[in-house]
Image (cartoon, rainbow, N blue to C red; front, side, top):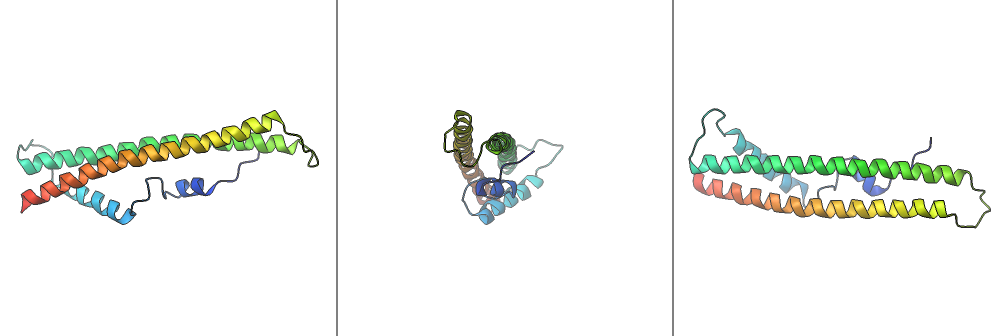
Length: 153
């Protein structure tokens, strides 16, 4: 069975790059590390009602939402990748049966090409939605961390 060659965006996705927007990774990583550090201070047994503890719980919830969002979109990207590979394989197998000197357009081939373009459009739309949602959650996380730091001093 033949497999489709992967595009640059698919390679970047598989390597874990650029799925979450073009924002500098180092700042996002620093933000998440700071949030995880604050969440670690959250007492596990007693429900502390102080303002810093309340902010730490909100930070914990936001970090969890970011993780769930990433996992959900990773699953969706992988499904699109599987469909793209399947369609690409079908296209290559169809081309294998067509003589090279033939200049006619085959409806099956054009249909599969259109499906590949649709998959790429879905991937772009999915990436944009992920970026929008991530920005909102990261902004909220930054605000919560800043509020927490102001209360600590």
